[in-house]
Length: 120
Image (cartoon, rainbow, N blue to C red; front, top):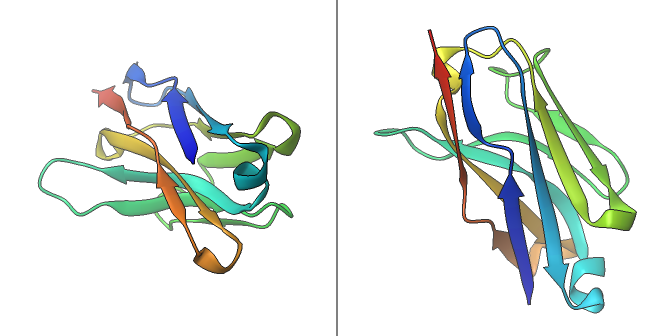
C-alpha cells in the first residue's frame, strides 16, 4: 500500500505565499506504479476540486482558478510532490489533499489533508 502525508498548511495573509509538500511512502513496487500526483482542495460547503497535477513524465495541469499563481513540481527520487502557492486569495481557503494514481488508474491514494487558511 501507499501512504501520502501532506505538510506545509497554515495561515497566511491574502497576497502571501505558502508551500505544500506531499511524501509517498510504502512498498517500492507500489510507489513505482504511480503516474499522476497532485492536489485537490475542498472548502466548506463546496465539492472537492482538482487544483493541479503532474505526471511522472512532468506534464502538468492546473485549475483555471489557480493558473499563474500556483506551481506544481515533483521529485521522483524522493517520491514527493510540491505545490507552491503565490498571490493567495481568501477563496483559496480549503483543506488541501494530496492525491496519487497509478498508471492505468488501477489504484489511487489520498492524503489526510492539510488546512490552508488565507486571511484578509
